[in-house]
Length: 266
Image (cartoon, rainbow, N blue to C red; front, side, top):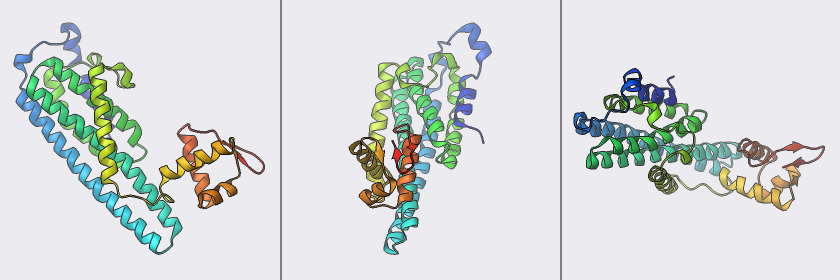
């Protein structure tokens, strides 16, 4: 499977030999901005299709959760709630990319110059770098779909002749200009709000993120030393759920678990 980052690197290094000798081309008059906007609109349509598919998947897992709760199947309910939480996170990233594509289309159509083109491609690059790193383990099918979206916009970058050296590496949003950072921040904020509205509400007792917050509060109250059995009783979940929550929190770097003879230290 072609990774998103690989596709981006291929796109941004197109025509490298020529550009190294001539510098960044200043050929705004030779750029077909209508064609660029059309290509970006095609990419946006594909992202919208992916978003609709994910919305349907969230509804599907919610129905499974409701069914499991009615059947008092705790294991299936916990699994469906976890999958729903993952889908919500992926949905947020997809929506953020959709927002940035929309901003790029609007700005390029209005301004029609190389400088604006670079500034609008930069946040797209950053979000796709982030998406590749974040989603590759969570949703490889979505990662592959988004990679095809980037491939469809490869011609945009090729025609303009942009270099990878023109844009930051995308490893940190701090590397970008204030304008680009504001674009990314706004897109992520709007995406988070849309994800909250689109994702079905999960009962707090089964919401992984809510449980993580409650467990962290419990750990702080216990001054870092807890009994898994007692924590499970306090949270109203099975001990296996507490162990899973601890593993997730440790993977995120929020805590460090040090097993003791009869307690876990966090």
